[in-house]
Amino acid sequence: MLVASIHRDHRNISRLLKLLNQKLAAIRDEKPVNYGLIRDTVLYLQEYAEKFHHPKEDLIYHYYISHYQDHEGVAKLDAEHEALSALTSEFAESVEMILMDAVVPLDVFADKLTGFVEHQRNHLELEERAVLPAIEKTLTADDWNYLQSQWEEEELDPLFGEQVAVRFKELAAAL
Ligand SMILES: [Fe+2]
Ligand SMILES: [Fe+2]
Image (tube, rainbow, N blue to C red; front, side, top):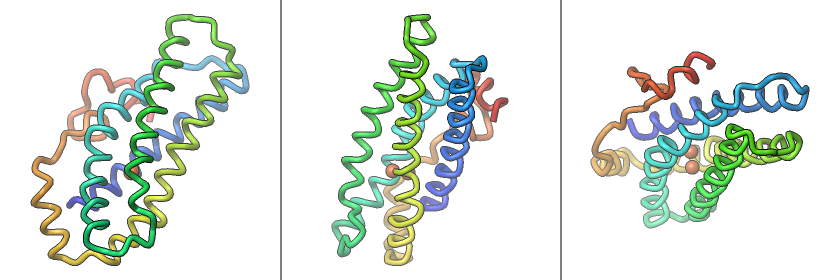
């Protein structure tokens, strides 16, 4: 079901954010860090969250805004998705620089990682705590049936799905 799969995605993304927080603590403690895992996490957010998770939410949000009173500020989430995507691609570049051994002061990188996790976390919590509960309270069974019919295929999750893609095996093992 559509909304169940959104909650599931949020739980999965939440696990990734925890992993990033562990990496952040290790960087701050000047311990060795596998930056490849940070890159893989960002890659997953770009390949899955941006391509499937956000569009799934947008479908519901757009429908909600056009059929009901938007007391929760759902309309602004569109812009948040775009801002998150821009932030993610900017952060991905910083990770690539570290992996290419470019000189990046670790405290600068740690600050970027902190900001990245905070933005992702704030967005996710806004949806889980305010937006989705309000939408779930409002939409009827007919609304959900309609929305479900508009979401054609169940996407294959390359990290948390049944088949873990080769490029995410190391990350899956680390979770
Ligand atoms: Fe979202
Ligand atoms: Fe979300």
